Structures are given as structure tokens and as C-alpha cells.
Image (cartoon, rainbow, N blue to C red; front, side):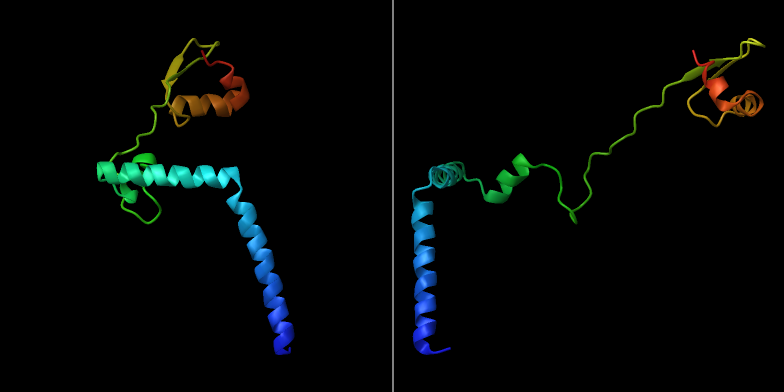
Length: 119
């Protein structure tokens, strides 16, 4: 490419970028963002707060790769289910499906049928 062609191409790019810059200067949303940033930085200097402190305040969850949180999350307790066998009147209370008698009933009568006995 000749120097003249390269010059004209760069000049055209510059003109396009200047046009974009001019459009951004007149954009109300950009003006609002600039005003917000200025006010935020002024507040940060007044209160002596740094950007990481604000991020920690607004987003308290640790980011990936950071240390584990001090708060331990616990699972909710399982609800007690009460099954009553209509034939024998026997009652079984369980928090899970690993109950010996409940398993026997499900084998004998079928799981769907036994779930109908749930009180």
C-alpha cells in the first residue's frame, strides 16, 4: 500500500472516530455516568473509603478463588412423615425413605400405594 493510500485510510478512520466521540459527548447517559462517578469519588474522599471497600459493601459474597466464608450454611431439617397402614393400623414416623418397615411396605404394596398412606 502506498503512503498516500495509508494516509487517506487513517484519515478516514480518524474522522469516523471523531464523529463517534462527538456523539458520545452529547449522550445524556454518558453525562449521567460521568456525574455519578465524580460524586462517588468525592464521597469516597470525604469518608476516606477506597473502591475495594465499596465493592465489599455492595457485594459481600466472596469472589471465586477467595477464602471460604466464616458463616456455615446449614441444610434445612427434613420434615417428619407419618405413614399409617390401613390394614394393620401400624404407624411409622420417618424423616427419610430409609426406614425398615416403610421399605417392607413399599415392596409388599408398591411405593405409590404406600405414599397414599401419608398423613
